Image (cartoon, rainbow, N blue to C red):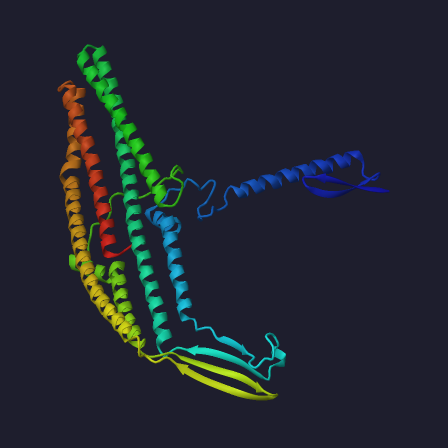
Length: 450
């Protein structure tokens, strides 16, 4: 009996020739091919729903519309500037360990009284010294404290960057929603213009309207087509901008999901101002800077006190071994002026930091008030359109459309009514977008990312 191997679908199966008939062998091969096809198809299907590097689903769910929270999460995780700021913060954290380190010990081998230049074994006296510098108590702590405060300042820079990025993402997100809303209205207007043009051409064929009515309708139709193309281009530009902020390729397809209409503000101006003074990273950074300058002054005062050098040696003279101990420190006789200058510098920097805190408090208070009043103004405009303009503009258009169908008015009146209705809806969407962006600006002024 002879045994050979058959490679089917990258699998090796023993086939005992001479025993298995040709028909059974063909059925076995067919079954293996079907199994291989099923395995390959299943693997491809599983690959179609795997996750991408940034956590999004690839395949059937790749076209999922992103909400504002999704966009913020992706931006804060993938934007290159945020990643760079985080790396800088990690570098500042690493400097804390450097500042915490102890001075390195020193080793000294001394072979005096050698009979020749290189004859340490024949020396009658030998020293093996170990030196260690012991810093004055508190100096290492203050140095570490300085590095920690610098790291905290760096972290507040990262928080400021997050605030700025969050505002840009919100602005791009709502502008993209506005562009889609405008595009929707423009397409509806285009459809209405087509229907109106067909109606006018039918009336002209029946002799009810003049050729001028037909030409006017065709001109309006061309304007509507041009408006649709303009909003399509604007949507592409805004989508590229949002992709850039999210750290993605600018040409990558993106769909967003959300509402332009945002809840009206319930916070008072004083509450917003108090929250901003507690949360803004610029103020926190200035406070950390003040603490750092105070620590720097303490460090300068501590510089008047010397460090200690401790030494321990194994001393051998003519075969007899001894232990030697040494203690040394520097006398602060010639560096009084240097310490005096360091203390004066620290005091000046403390005053500078105090004034910087005051500046940021005043600036943040002004930013909050401006953003707050802008939100209130946008809310009033939105209410005005929703209560007095939108419904009336649509009602006027519907009445004039009925009158035109009955032959009671001309096409010019209907065109003007449709323009007014379209402009009122687009303007309302713009005010909704301004309101949403003004809320985003208020969040940035307060110090809130979301």
